[in-house]
Amino acid sequence: MNTSKQVNVMIGLLFVSFLTIVGYLFNESNRQVVETEEITHRNAERGARLFVQNCRTCHDLEGTGGIGAAINNKAFWIYEEGNAAGVPATPEGEAEAIRKYLRETIECGRPGTYMATWSQRFGGPLSDTQVNHLVTLLTNDPTGKQDFWDLVIEEGHHADEEQFATVLEEELGRHPTIEEITERSREVTVVIDPTALTVNTESCGNWAPETKAQFRGRDPFAAPGEATTTVVTPATPTPPPADVSDADATVMVQMTEWDMIVDSPLPSGKIAFQVENAGAVAHEFKVIRSDVAADGLPIEGGKANEGGLEILATILEFPGNSTQVTTVDLSPGQYLLFCNVPAHYQLGMAISVTVE
Image (tube, rainbow, N blue to C red; front, top):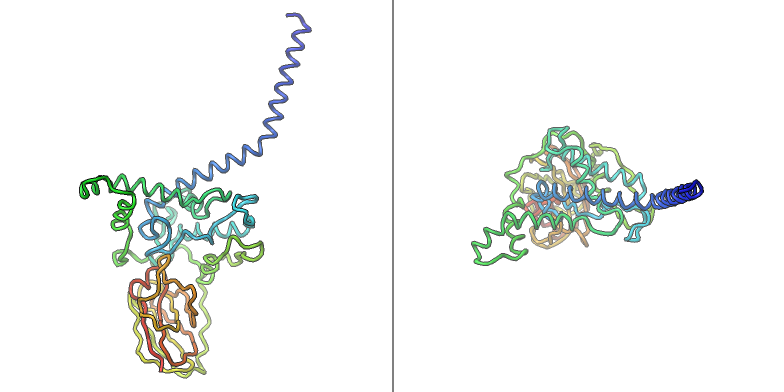
C-alpha cells in the first residue's frame, strides 16, 4: 500500500473514531437516564424482597396497614422532572425531607409502638444500604412509569407459592388458586393479635406527632408550593396544657391496652377531658358525635376511616404513663370516643357515651 492510501485509511479511521465519540457524547445523557432508572428499579426490587421478608407481618403485603400503619401511601411518593404521570416534580428539599423521615423511622423505630429499631447501627438487623432500598420502594417510581408496589406483590406471591402451594394442594386435592394461597399466607404471616409483640421502649430518635401527620397528609399531585413539607426536625415537644379554667366539668378517661374507661352519661357544656394513658404504648384520643356502635366505624388501612367524620376533639399520640387534656363543647346526644393509632380501634379502643 502506498503512502497516499495509508494516509487516506488513517484519515478514514480518525473520522470514524470522531463520529463514534461524538455519537457517544450526544447519547451520554440518555445513557445516564436509562442507567439511573435501572439502578432505581433494581434497588426497589431489593426493597420489595426486604419488605416481604420483614415488614408484611405488620403492614400487610400491599402496605395497606394492619398492626402497623398504612405505608403504601401517595404522601411518600417522589416525582422527577418530566415524569410519565404528568405531575409536578417534587422539589429537592421536600424530597430529601421525605427520605429523611422514612429513613429515620425505619432505622430507629417508633417509641411506644410496635415499630422496632431496624438499623444495625442501633441494634437492628438491616444495613444502611438495605434501609435505603426500603426508602426507594416507599417513595415509588420517580419516573411515574410504574408502581413499585407491584414488585412487592409479585415477590410476595412468589414467596407464598413456595411456602404454601404444596400444603394447600394436599388439603384441597388440586392446585390452589393465587387467591387461596394469598389468603392462607395472610392467616399465617399477618399479625392480628399484637399481644405477642414487643413494645419499642428505646428509640434513637422520634418525630413529633404533628410532623408525622404533616408528612402523611402530603399531596404529591398538588402544584408546587401547595404541598410542601416544612417541618423536618425530629422532636417530641410537650404541648401546652389546655385551658380548663372555664370548663363546666372535667371527665376522666383512662386508656390501656386495649380498652377505654369513662363514666357515662356525661354532662353537657364545655367539657375538659383529662385523658390518662395508663398503658405501655402510645395512644391518641378522638371525639366524634355519632350514634354508631363502638365497633361500627369502617376500617381502612388498619384504622377507622375518618373520611366524612367531624372530629370534635383530638389528642395526638402521647406516650404511656402520661396524661393529656383537651376541651370540647358537648350538647346532649350520643358520642364516640376512640383511639385511631393503627390497629388500636379494631382491638377495642372505642367507647360510646351519652351526653345529657
